[in-house]
Image (cartoon, rainbow, N blue to C red; front, side, top):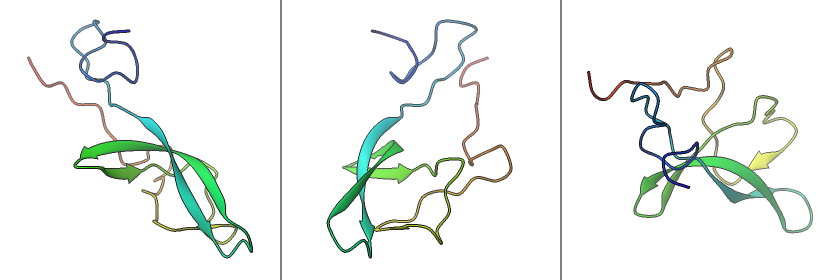
Amino acid sequence: MSGGLGSGGTNGRAGIAVAVVETIYVELLGEGIDVWRPVDAEPGGDGVYRLLAPFDYDSTLETWRFEPVPWSGANNGCSVRVLAP
């Protein structure tokens, strides 16, 4: 599907940019067995991802191999930007 949510580019309405978000798996530490959690992440190129914390993320309940971007109130640090006038 071209131009839809999660596909990058614009959504076809007013040229609003849509971020690419993929589901990847991050290792949880200290669980006693191998545990991998599905996590939303933004690809940054060269195989690097920015992990997006779920709204209910609590670092005292689970320890991720790599720390996610924390929520700031209702905003997780991502913002919508119009790329063209």
